[in-house]
Length: 139
Image 1 (cartoon, rainbow, N blue to C red):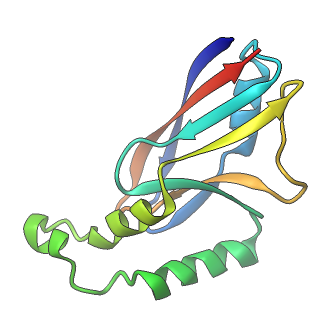
Image 2 (tube, rainbow, N blue to C red):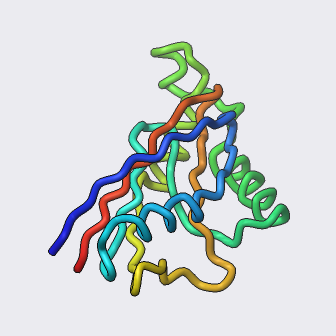
């Protein structure tokens, strides 16, 4: 078993921005020296998350609208009362989405579906510099 750890730096605008990071992750898996296994994609922090979707403008808009319906940004959040940073909704949204996913790969290729891409969602109320941590395990 081989384990390779990689880091990818990205800049985000926050406010629910979704970034397709599939090609960056595929490149790191391909260059890892691991032929088949799994890659864990993890984003540190409490205001961003990671998932897979069909990354196209209509669905990106639908996802943004869904987050606003389910966890509105304009409600009163206790976090905002305590810290005054206006990102209480960001923390709640990120906790629901989650900070990591696992994706199998075979022959150095991610086993994603035809219309499935890996996306980072930054829910914070400001632009951020983010780091994505990859743990690539296999043989």
